[in-house]
Image (cartoon, rainbow, N blue to C red; front, top):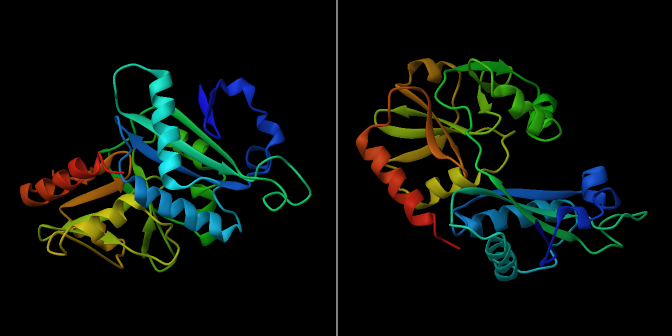
Length: 258
């Protein structure tokens, strides 16, 4: 069951191959955490609109309407509120010679079980070019993540100067002197969860700066952060109490935000 421009219907009722988003990849999507409500909803919508702007597209519905679509679909599916993945797609719409300019964008919302992402299993660095990094994060994203489920360690991508870019699924940070330091890099794509941490927590607890591969070996803990899982330990010791308390309180507070 999906929400198609606000209409609840079965997935088979939509002509997936007749839409430029699913046939040619013209469009954007957001993956959000749902547990009765959406965590970081406004941040996700801001990132979605920024992505659409780069494609010369606009979302045909405002944020409150999108939020209503999500809650209506959750109600239609029924059952007790439980952690789920909510995927919001905005596509170029029905195919034409110039998709996105002659067609109205299509908005699709769907729910899926929250995946048990591979975490806390060690890390290794992997040298990539910008092309490789964006390919991993986009075109081969789903297959890449699936392949990593059985991998013995989690890759962290670095450039030819050994500066940390990111990982396939997490924003990468380290614990240095009881402070969470996230890597920043020109190739990075926007991270909703990392932005929320940097925005809402004092720099006493969290910051970002360029990090290099040797920071991983010198850190007591390597952490990953994304909107579905929050902050998780990828390798090393558990988070110290002050940091875990501050981060946990933020994610709990933002869990019910709109």
